[in-house]
Each structure stands twice: as C-alpha cells, then as structure tokens.
Length: 104
Length: 104
Image (tube, rainbow over the protein chains, first blue to last red):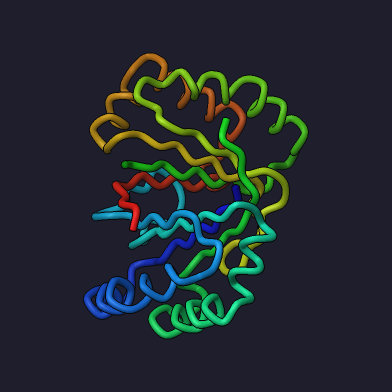
C-alpha cells in the first residue's frame, strides 16, 4: 500500500475549515482514481510529542505509489489538490507526507 | 477506529535506528493488547509540506481510544513505550498523534 498523511494545524476559523473540508473537500478527494481508503480524525487530537496545535488528520490509501501518483495527476486529483489550497492556503499550516508502507 | 501516528525525524545514525526499530521495537509493539493493525513506511518519505527531515512513519490502529489507552497502560504497552525512548530519546525528534478516526 501507499499512504498520504495530511496533518492540519489549528485553523484561524475552525468552523469555516470544517464546512469546507466536510462539505466540499471530502467529496472531491473521494473521486480521485485509485483511492482505496480515506480516513479522517474525529474530535480532538492528543499530541504526545511534537507540535501541539494539530486540528485534523486525513489519511488516504492507494495500492502503491504509482497508483497514487496517477490519481493525483488526474483531473480529479488536481481538483482535490487545488481545493485544499482554498481552505488551507498557508503551507506552514499543513504537513503532507507520502510514502510506501507495509503492514507488519 | 483509533489511530496513533508516530513520525520520526532523520536519526543521527540511521543504521542503528533501523536495527533497533525493526529487530526490537516492532516485536514489542506487536504485543500490545488490542492492537489491530500496525503499518510502517517503507523507503523514502516524500514531503509536500512541512518538515523535510522525516525518516519513518509508524501507524498503529486499535478498535477505539479506550482500547488504545488500555493497551498502552498494559505491561506490554509500557515496555513498547520505554523501548521507543531508547532509540528515539529526544522528544524533538518525534511527533506522536493519537485520535479517533472514521473511514469516509
């Protein structure tokens, strides 16, 4: 599998963030070709180490990195990426990691 | 489900980190009661936003936050946590997030 973890810091306007994320972004992201699973954190995030101002974590799973790359290169992938920059425009407010993974 | 995401920064000695993580830590962590799934990143991590010095990401899944708390309060959970502080002793070198999650 391949995963993308997206970690959002506390937004200035949490209600506006939630509205955009849950009412627009999720439906766009779910259309990305090859997406196998999409998980979103629910409620507060406990931070044991690292930055404490984390608000929401989304995790997207694809079969492998090639499938993920193809998915994000598609029109649907580009639309989801462009939408993300609407509700989280400041790159310092988000961490995005992409990696191949194995279940152990 | 509930998830714990552990993000390790590039260690000073990657070979020593790998030896400890893959030969000791994984077997300890897999003994935590209630652990449902354990995924580890494989190979380099691409960073689209956020800190660029990320080396490895581990994700542990439990049925819910209560099960996770019980697991980490157990002797096996405490042993895995203590072991983590051996190979990643500097809290600035790791991010750990705990959260309830939903598949959407």
